[in-house]
Image (cartoon, rainbow, N blue to C red; front, side, top):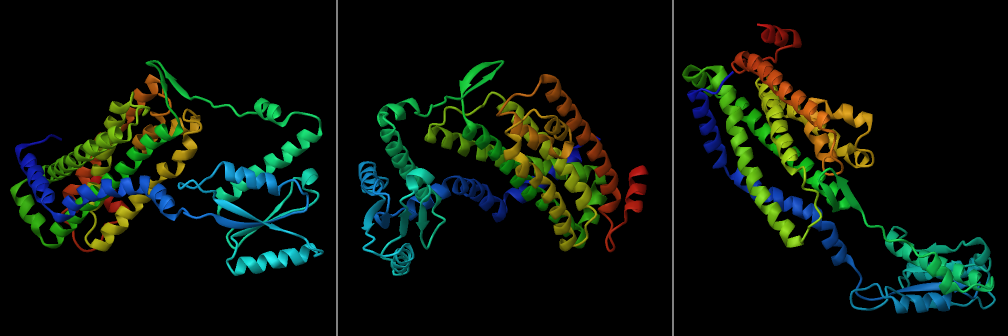
Amino acid sequence: MKLTRKALRVAWWEFIERVKTKSFLIGLFLTPGIMVLFAAGPALLKDSLEHTESQNVAVYDASGIVFDSLEASLAASPTLDNGKARYTLERIEAAGRSMDAIKADIDSALLRDSIVAGILVPASAPDSHRVEYRSKNVSDIEGIRMLERRISRIISGYKIAHAGLDPDRVRDLNRSTDMRTVRVSEKGEKESGFLESFGLSYVFLIFMLIMILSSGQMLVRSMVEEKSNRIVEILVSSCSPMDLMFGKIVGISMLALVQVLFWTLIGVALVFAAQLSNLPLENLWLMILYFFLGFLFYAATFVAVGSLASTEQEAQQITGYLSMLLMLPIVIAFIATQSPNSPLLVVLTLLPPITPQMMFVRLPITTPPAWEIALSLVVLVSSIIVVTWIAAKIFRTGILLTGKRPGLTEIFRWIRS
């Protein structure tokens, strides 16, 4: 298994043919745009959906201790960008009505859209700490939690004052602590947090998913197209199947390298623009190494399984199974951040199909022991050699095969030959 001059010619041809396509050029610019949209889109959408005018909330306060303090609290600390309070309060008086009648009136106002919510504070609220929030939309978690916290503080302050204590003094004693997070490693300490660590892991996970799927599908489609058009027979007559296979892998890898370098430049520019100085970059070179080794592993895998496909439908089915395998690390990434050195994650790290992705999750959080990194690299490189050898065996026969897809028994016979 070595790169010959013919294999390099195939690689260069694959690279030039693919790099000139519109789909590659569009994906080169569109992919980072989609990534930026996913990262910044929710914040931009939230800003665009923010109300610019105060919303009216009806409050029935049977306890007599909540309304005035809540109104003052909302006025003193506005939550809209224009300086206005997010909510203005409308006092509801009982006027001899029952609680059911008050609820009916509030519901009627809600259905007329004259108010956005109604808050019912019973006389027992100081003891039960229970109030009722009524609205057509109870999914506004941020707004509901804000009102809940302020009402809770008002009721607690009232009880503290009536217990003969100073509410301001008690609040100062119970003030929450601002915890500074510092990542400690053998190289020293660096201030960092969950968003920086998980964000870097997530970027590598998504980039690898996109790179493998786009390049792998491109590789499989090109083989299916060459088989259906009988072009592969001409290619094999000019070079050996091994030269053709290695040429395709190297050509697609060169294409991936161009994409990674371009996206890296965009990423560096965004990091400087956003002034992100706390990114855990100590193990960045290791993450890049795992990225390229993982790409080579999957490139050989796609060559092996792609050479068995004779139709576009079969190719899509094959790449679909591999896509599900690539999604597994993304699914468990958030859980893995909580205990990156657990025995289960160590075992998963040594499984070649997901070794790179698991290291993407673990390296920005806490550096694994040197022996574990070395062992995972040995396992991954050995797996690449084995998978490439198997792919060569399958590719040699499968690339010329058309019609019915071979069974497992026949594939094993190709590998043993």
